[in-house]
Amino acid sequence: MKKKLAAIALSLCLLLSMAGCGGGSSAPAGSDSENGLTKVSMAFCTWTGYAPMFIAQEEGFFKDKGIDMEIQVIEDESTYASLITNGQIQFLATAQDPNIKMFANGANSRYVLTMDKSFGADALVAGADIKTLDDLKGKTVALDKSASSYYFFLKALEDGSTLKEEDINVQDMGDTTEAGVAFMGGQVDAAIMWEPELSEALDEVEGAHTVVTSKDYPDTISDSLVVNTAFAEENPDIVEAVAECWYEAIDYMKENPEKANELMASGFEEVTAEDIANDINGLEFIGREENTALNDESNEENIFAICQEMAAFWMSKGECETDDLTEYFALIKK
Image 1 (cartoon, rainbow, N blue to C red):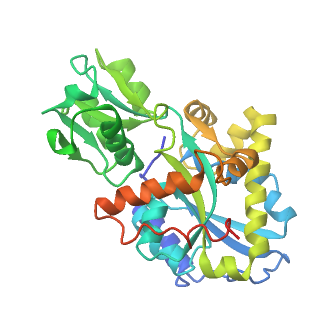
Image 2 (image 1 turned 135 degrees about the horizontal axis):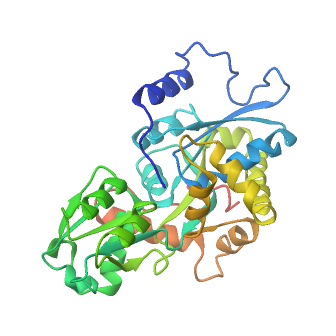
């Protein structure tokens, strides 16, 4: 259900407004707005994994902690590094490996927490003649190289196949939705896709089945929250409060699932509570206890090791200038 279909005019309007060219009257981050709350902004795209932030907004969790939170839904992820670096937004939620790549290439950001993991919401779907990853030799696979699903695919090849990427005709699509559509249209042999195209393909394409899913590789596709470095240094209490609001929202989801789905859907255009419920089936939301465990280096699957592997991988692909994540984790490694 990740969507990159927002109108260009809306995205431009949002960017102009945040840059101070839209004539808006909102107070700058960190100052007191007219209601006595501290103005803070956050951005993310249309994706259920980030939607608990709308619970925090609608249920007043932010206001209870003195925060006037402005949430911007921005689909153009190519703008994220500039927005977080320049402080035009204070918080950014996006996939973990793009966050790492942005930091490694100079973005002024710091990791705050992990929000969710894909646990079956992403998959490699293929026709009946492709039963294993090795059967992809010489076949055409559609995917979005800018998405986390690319990392998922390459890690699956590395761990579960004798093939290399060059043994396969990898067709880079504009986004993962387009990859799914290409498969359903019979234009490619297989595709990395997510919901709703994932379920649609399995239902509508004869012989379609999943070869491997993110449930098999849960550490490859996750989402994280980062904060502008200068803002974090000047407002550590706000950073802690925003994290607390996330944890409260996850608790609310567990206690009020139907209402939570409605609240999460309300923040996005053309998204229903049913869409949210369907996405949740393939997600694992990461609350307070799970983040505490991830931050414990004595645990084998800790966040530092997971992210270090991502950074090293992308550096080997020429996508990162460094794999040193010391400063990235400065807020949780005090």
